[in-house]
Image 1 (cartoon, protein in one colour):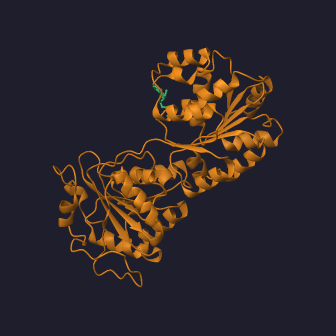
Image 2: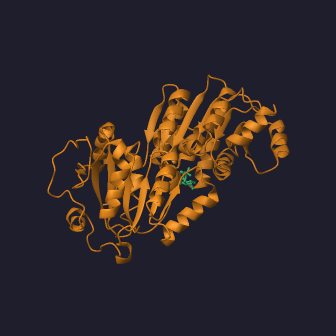
Image 3: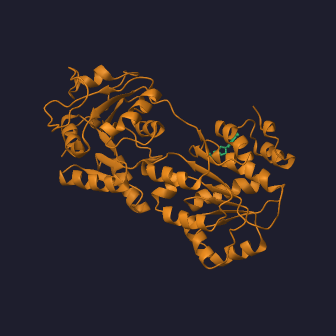
Length: 414
Ligand code: AMP
């Protein structure tokens, strides 16, 4: 496979060669023909997969024809750093076709951005706040936008930009192509995609094979009993650093507070926290000040903390891909880890999807002497279903050479 198959303009091809790209990455392979055909697209892929060129190249191709000096492509990104990166890719590949791109984001001179807009551009790469600010002042015309890209849509949602995105979309023609890129598809991102895309194609990249050193266990439980189960599990499990995932920022905040009330050394990591607060939580988790970190998927993305012994999915992830991202945080660097997933009866379909990715059923466990109330876990009680230490060796798969480091094998201290 090479880039010639896409029959891109020779000037764009030459840019691709200059960039040293020999062959398209999987997301480019799948997405470029669809975008060239004018289709709406959901691209589930993270940074590092080549997703920027996957939308930038067909957009540049599209812009080789038609009017100049009008904003015909709008790319919305959650951060200025990402906006700059995208702008750079568009500028590099669009140099020879003389496509003009600019960035719009806060924290820098607005006057300059408005002046650049006046001179005329075809592509705007923006963060939502400043874009709306300029739009509200009547200094940008978005009525000629033919292609809208939302990049890192899950992060846009997580950072609270959803209302801004909806306002921006109202300023655009309804007749347009929309490309939606996201690393994960939490509920709010899915809902947004459903309302703004027309008959989209979905391409998904990067289901990473879960680490072999992680053992997986499912704890069927009623929604209302989750907290009790978590506390009981923490008490009975010799755990080191434990990363706990919740579905929402609110649930992360509340759960971390509840754990603190129970005298656990816990912190939350979620999108509503300032950069500084997040850093304090992460540093504390890394240094051992906190044993438990309660996080949302997006906030935990890319965190690199060694020696996480347990990942607990307090809430089921929204996709099988999100599951592999979550449990990818444990079982690293030759250490084995465990992934506990709480599952309510509503989670059955997702459990199946995860088992498909794992290519094996996940062992169901029940906690002995735990008061499940009226909830009847729909599986047979197994003799292996306790949380004693010996279980670790019994269920561990893959690399058994090293156990957890002793320092991290203390029970989660109250
Ligand atoms: P992205 O996921 O768009 O942030 O891209 C990640 C990195 O991959 C960037 O440094 C790109 O320049 C690079 N890249 C993207 N597509 C290709 C390709 N087809 N061949 C080689 N490198 C690429």
